[in-house]
Each structure stands twice: as C-alpha cells, then as structure tokens.
Image (cartoon, rainbow, N blue to C red; front, top):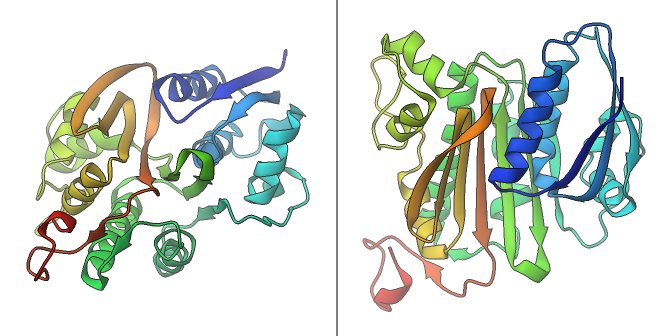
Length: 290
C-alpha cells in the first residue's frame, strides 16, 4: 500500500477535507500497515483531529500506523505538544510555550479536562483580558462541550489540543470526539431525522439540547458573543457539514466526505486589548464590555 501524504493541513475547510478524506479511505481497512507522511505545514491543534482519526482506523489494533516522513518543523512541534509520543517519538520541551498539549481523555476525565482548560488555555498570558465572571462563563461554555461529548457522542475517548501562533496573534483550541455526530445524536435521542448541516444549526441555538429533562445546548451563546467581539472564529465539523462563524458571519459548507464524529475548534485573537466584562458588572468604559 502506498503511503498517505497529508500536506499543507490548515485549520480551514480544505484542511478538514484532506483529513476526512484520509479517514474515509482507511476506516474500513483490515490487516493493513498505514504509512503517513506529514509535509509542508500542519496546524498543531489539528493533532486532536488526526489522533481521533488514527485511533478509529486502527480498528482495535487490526491495522498498523506508522509515520515514515515528517517534515522537520512539523515533527518538532508535534513532539513538543506530545502528539508523537503516542507513536514512539520522544517528547521535546516547549521552550517558548507555544503549544497546548495534546490530550486523549476518557469521558470520565472531566475534572482533569477542566484543570487542563484553565492551565493551558484560559490562564495563558496571551488570552484576552476578562473579568472573573466572564472567565468563569467562558470556562463553563467550553466545559459544556466536553460534557456533551461525554454524555452523547458514544466515543471511547475525547481528544483536545491547541496552538499559539505569535506572529499571527491567534490561539487555536480544538475538541474532538469520534462518536456518532450531531445528526445521529438528535435522531437517536429525539427521534428526528435531520441533515448534518441542520443538526449543527439546531445545536447552535441556545437552549436546544438532546439531554432529557434539562436545559442546555452546546453552551456556545456567550462564547459566540465573546469570539465575535474578539474577531476570532468558531468551527464545527460533524457528518458531512462544516460550520464557521468568522467576521460576525455564519456559513455552512458541505464536506467532500462524511466524518463519524464531531470537531469543535475555536480561534482567539491575542492582539485584542479590550477587557471583557458582563454588562451587569460594568460601571465605565462601555466599549469594553458585553
């Protein structure tokens, strides 16, 4: 079997299409040795996506996974964030602290995830300034994504990773599960057949939830507002749909292949000098609040 070259993988529609095409080509393999090349560029937060894909296509150990050619700059960053430690490579110390560590967590590890979220993302000095109340609300919003994956995805593991790009003033953070995806989750729990695109639209509405007897949703309401003011980005991949909120505009596009799981990726701008507070906290400087 020829090697698979994953080249120029960015946190965008094209990057997700390349990764999910690789998943589609190998998800039914049995007794194969899958050899992978990583060349040109690889956004390190997408380690979470690649990790979920590789664990799935291993098919309980029936297939072998081996990296046979990794471009030096990519290998260095994936050794720093710990991703390649799962594939026999030594870990490298991250001197400049630009990586958010790759984690493969069990659904029961919510307390560990919450501490990781604080230490690796929200308490970074590069993260936008915010009041304690906003900090808590943003933390709760992202924790809700982990809780949803834990309760509904039917995924054995939840994967997360991030990357800080100093020259581009952006901080990426990604959460992935390899479970049943949004549409199948809604169909199973609510009895409604729905497309992947409509499932994402439905899940983005505050209060919509597949949990029985409780309010909820993805927990994205305050996060959407924060990221819009911050001029950041939210992306969701599930089934054959790619959603993106950027520049205060929402768009949904169709992927070339189907991903049996879900990805939520956030981009925060770090050259944002505003201080974020809730309107109920603010006494002055109305431009710095939401």
